[in-house]
Length: 161
Image (cartoon, rainbow, N blue to C red):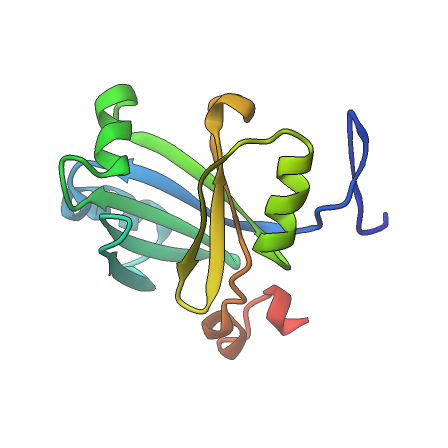
């Protein structure tokens, strides 16, 4: 199979490297960690961070080179808090790893996939969201992060190839 994806419109040039991560929106991060860590076979997150701009606190676990993230809102007006208010706790987004977020956004918008809030920065990469109304109710993220920390650990990532 070549690097181009087929869509109902024909060839879709955006190349997806892998599922990057899946995010679960939770009300209480510490309580959620106690529920999920035994199931994931982890005693602590592999990565944890605050993202003030996105108003979230995150616990990330690596599962076969794919991130599994628990996200808690830092504020009542954050997107995670709004999601939980509307839909309850649960899967909030699926993220696809791409070579270039900017190129992917250009290709997506050319095919009438609405982008929410434009392209944003995270660590040494960029990401963007596709509106869930176009994606069967799922918030889709495209991100071009290379996960060098996984490469250093010998995990299978686009950087490790």
